Length: 582
Image (cartoon, rainbow, N blue to C red; front, side, top):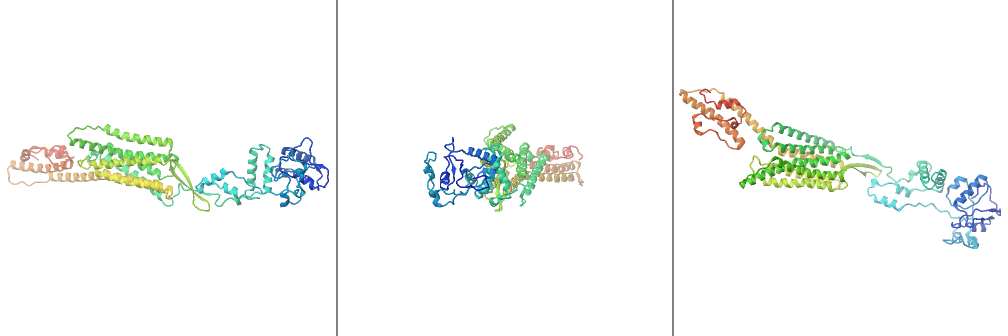
């Protein structure tokens, strides 16, 4: 290379800046056989100049406008820096390349001068080499390891497609050399990034090398639901909450009715509280997932089912135990604190499990990109999940355990007195809850692998939880509410009949006052006894009068208010009136 614009004359006596003898170059042969009258020997530099030495020579030549000739690789940053011109040598041929002096790994530092000059046929110019790309093997491995096409980076494919010319490399190297801040650290990175920014859309137009389908068009589907399942699930969840609150309100209003007192009000309160938590969890499940709500749903559903179902199982177990011991003529004492303690133990076990789950591997918001079109549309599917699916499996297994217990207790309690026997209700609830449990298992473990959208899976699960809550409450409470309604209806009808019967005018025949009083007493006693019998029949299944038969025949029958179980104190006073006047 020469910084001069004029021609280089042959046989011009001058000095050539020799390169290091460790370089693979053929300048000795090219100078000698092409009759370039330069002296290559340099005093004090028997092995030639290093790369940094040549840079200093070029800087001095450029500053003093002095001629210099040297050998250097191409592309290089010094060409753009010093505006050098290449020296043309004879055309490169295959024969020339095959007759190069000292090819391969021969030692050039201690070689003879004749060996370095070689044959004249091997003194041609250098062969042009195409730039080669060197990619780290880990880059390809990392690209192949990404199985989801939507998550795969286009970097590897773009690096394989890209083509950079010698002129492009000269620009990059010139930018690198001009920075002078961190030459072998940050400067090369900054030089490449600056060149890419300058040629991304102009000049080289690097966008031509971007693989098809990039850049991606990202669509967040956490709030989108064209099927309408999510709004429907949310409405159904609020309906379940309304049913639970209505059930609790009706139970509180009619808490003095025997059919509810037999069922133990504190256990009914726990039953409603548990299914209220389940309904709230179903409502949250129908909303957009968040890290805070994902684990809250698990707490609400698992604890809700435990609080709602376990108290009923404990109560049925206690009644069954009492009846079994009663058949053996044994006295049994079971305190309310003992029964609530069993419920507390079950709640403590599941609370400990949920606490460990929350601490080690909580259910959190998970985003999964899915490539939905070849044009590069990526749908971000959002769901709630833990790193290990075993936690959800244990939660489902816990529900399965007390469903088996419920089925066993319902079968064992089938022969208990009807006032305390809830085996049919518990059996229906067990069948219903088991059916919904199986459907929830399918929705959780099968539907996602079948390609169903995570938000549709969440909506389906929410609907199943709401339907399970409504069905369980209906199966257990609806028969009790209907029984209360029928009893109140009968009571109102009997009260109306009693009032009409008591105050109806009577016609007397010509009997003696004593006989009339006896007939009147029979009339009042008969109607009162009839109602008392009916009322007792409702309570215990049998009608008994507290007065002896002799008193009934004399017309002096007396009933207490508790036996009649009516709300009219006037009727009680009339029945107990022993005077002659009614």
